[in-house]
Length: 525
Image (cartoon, rainbow, N blue to C red):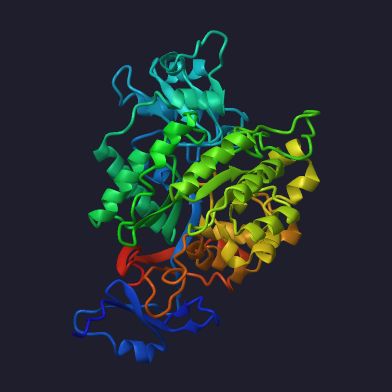
């Protein structure tokens, strides 16, 4: 039986990212896989009467992008939670809160999408609980910021926190105390949110994602979408079995939670990448655990949320039950601890363990990670708007050395490190991030650690072939070669040859996942 070619893209510049870096003119897709790549005249002959033919007119095709650490579920929350996108003043933020609160019943929760008011607002701060109380009419309000949050009086009271003398500002553990009492969405609401989130990533040319910390209920919804053919994004999940990054359950309970092993893959649209655990805080907040003390706090070395013995028992139990582990580690002291634990608990037959963020990793630690077979998921956008805040905590030298992509690529190889965003903490835009990886310029145009820049070709691979290797899918994903999954993006600029300004302005004209067009601007006819 001869299969019918479903889709043909002709007359473009196709970066296959195969081992030779072949550039072709056209690509054919059959049954969700790439069936041919080559000269336009040869590929055109494969089109039949029912084949959809797209004329690229010289535009660029790349393999679908992979965001290797992204809380993608937050991208589908418009209309469900308060968006602070584009907000620059405290009054404007409060107006957004009031507008959503007006659509809610008295006593109903008002939640915000993660943001960074200290950097985003001209006042340099977010609203306090008194301002939230007035804006939301006394409703419970919870506004997450990553490692911090703000809550209204009603939200504090519902979580058991005495609001007396409390401004509503929550950091790390206190944040989770309130987050635990925020009601869950219904299954139908969550399916709609996750579907919208997938489409939002598709519009950026992203076809695969490593979900940074999925709760069990979200895992089940993502799996249901994959099973029902409603998924437009390939999801590899880092799972938080208790819904928390620092589980406080007894070891026996932890072992029981993991005993059945990782959820099975659903076709090519869902797989379990591992368990997610958190070891320290972050650079911007000044809570990353560091070898050297902070500049502004003599003797302070940041925060560690798990001791070596506790982390080792959690990781060992995960390995024994068949789960790889991803540890949130930002500071070099936290990386030391995690590497000690990964060395002591090594388990053959699993995907590699992952250091997530590893923003302040040093060369000796990179060499140690390579020896242990541990991967790194790094995110350049932490430096995009945060340089001044980070330097205020750590000083210029350590800030310049942060997110050392050059050292990571040289030390671990391209398959040992992958690019991502940590969205919504940072912007989702992959081309802004490729610009930052290759120029090391921040939002103000200043160079931050120029010696750690990588080449355009390396940056593109960190977003494609490296992302595929990160989930063990390098044989079928990340390249446009015959037999590979038909995941690709059509761009209006070539990311390997465009000027810096053109690169940052790159538009995704079409995105294809498994041979299905999931995003189309209509510009290709």
